[in-house]
Image 1: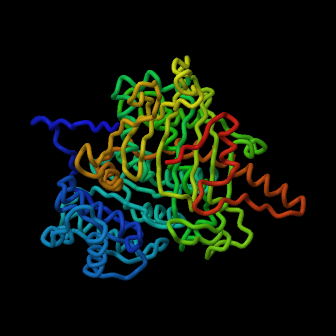
Image 2: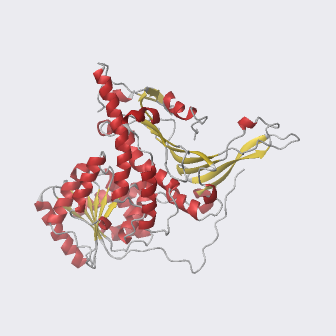
Length: 522
């Protein structure tokens, strides 16, 4: 059964889309992959949609020497290839007139002096209102040097001025609690908290934002969104590729840092948070922080009971053979970096006590998918147990699919046609593409617009980052203890293996099997 809601026509007095005023954006790391694939195409799309002014100004900054014209040609390649808007030559030429470039080091004053001169010239010639957005599309190692140089060059406006300054910081924001706290302290010595936008592109995805709408704009769901009706929650973020050419980087990170600390804990907070008093940055983020603080912290000796880690071994995915993780280029021969994590979270609050949240993420899994599955408790009385084995009556499951095929589905039991009472699971489903006639825009479009508008609702606050890192660092401490114990016994630690193209190690299944629960197969 497929249910596709009809989207009503918008009334004539519908509020106009939000549009920003004049501003200038500096992209540090402008010659890199993120700028070319995501940022510049997103800015082009926003201008074409009328959400950014036609004279929006962009300044690229990186070590590579480019003239303005050469950088515009580089930007054109990225926009033509990755923009979801139709590329029109006339529109591109107008957009390109607002693109400029400054070359320089990230830790030397002379480059920032040139940048300051260029910005002040553009403030005057393009009437930017002295509103400035600095985007750190750089390796994390240069976050602090760039922030320092911006401060020393007097490019950061005081918060009480009429014009504004904002800083966007990409993940990873630290590699553990101590490093995240140190980075926060450094940035807050130059910027105010309300000037810092810590970006997680997952929060810009339409389906992620729809979690709050689904919960709090529909009166039928929130009353059952608690321990009395929910059996457990599963969150899966899987990738069907290995580490590819990123082995050197990934071996220093791993699945826990790469996916769980940011993306997955953000999803946990949105699914589990209490209703905010208003849909604004302070109220929403307050409730997200409260939820994260409710996650039961693990002692080092408990980590093995609640968290499973593993590495992929050779296997086939979509007809291609993948080598073992330890055989990938750039990966240490004795690496203990995890490519798979499964974590049973316990949330100690009134709403969720006794309801486990199961998180699963990994490389080299059968398919690329991100989804949240809410498993409801079985009916209290098996009225149809005689008609169909009651133990096999499917649970009601609500699935929020983030990617691909964005949408929401609900599995229910229905009677099969015929004289006998036979039950069969069916789905009621909503899909963005079929219901709205279009695919959701790229997440960076929404997030970049929010930064320019000064809306920080979908960005992480300092305390949010640090409490997430606290819970993750406790897991890292447990793994460190396991490795030290193995070394003291004279046997190097080797992680469990799972064949590439499978859904992970047997231990991950056992994590749920103890509770008569099973991982959903997307």
